[in-house]
Length: 83
Image (cartoon, rainbow, N blue to C red; front, side):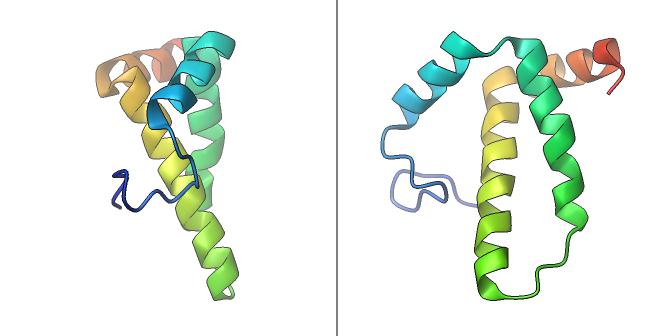
């Protein structure tokens, strides 16, 4: 899913500011927990286009958070937290 500045799935205008707010307000453990709770959404089968659009935004959010943590840190925290 593209997450470039031209096709932002979330509506976030300033990716750098968005990520700064996340980092300033959430611990890495909280971010890993949010990702864990968003992952089951990938199994949801949307009934209409509005639901599909919303699901793509959730997927973008989970991917953005994972990218912010880095895959290795994400995996380490998931194991450490028992997620």
